[in-house]
Length: 223
Image (cartoon, rainbow, N blue to C red; front, side):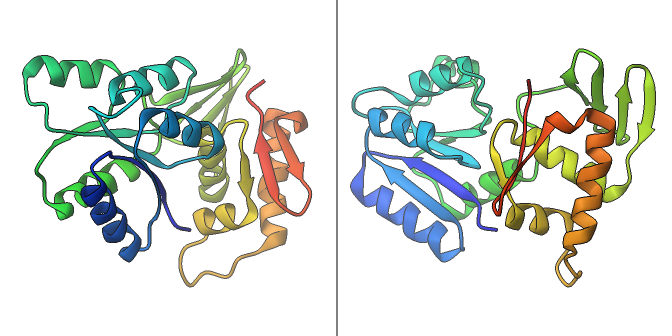
């Protein structure tokens, strides 16, 4: 499945150059030229990563990221900017960015930074223990689910599925996304096996946690 990026860059030539580069590498990239359009795009889409220029019209990149972080949006972000002082760097990281690249930059370097971040499993959470509700947490370091003090060792596919759901709380996770996450290239995808993995997680977490969206996929509810 293609990774979906948002690019906020008001320099038209650079915007088009970055878009062409990543599209040729089979990314899906949505580009905007001002802060208001960037916020609208973030609210209307689920992006895998944000590429944010800082000095742009309307709302600057720092303020955009501060705004969405306050709303518990943990989408990783890289700032693209010509600012180079230590104070600017501190402002960038204080607002919740994951990386920072200064202009001018090589496109290959930007790609390396993007790929490195996208390989992470959980963003803006330094703990290996992910709290699911007051009685339940999941330890990503050993794939153990702790439910009311009982430790449950998850198998490989159950663990992958739970991680995917936790990365996309309250969002639709399509069947296609699940298949591409759980099964490696060349493996046979199994709908019946997926139903078994869903059944397993519902048994541990409660049926109400994983909502089936007919013909589309599933939604993991954080409530």
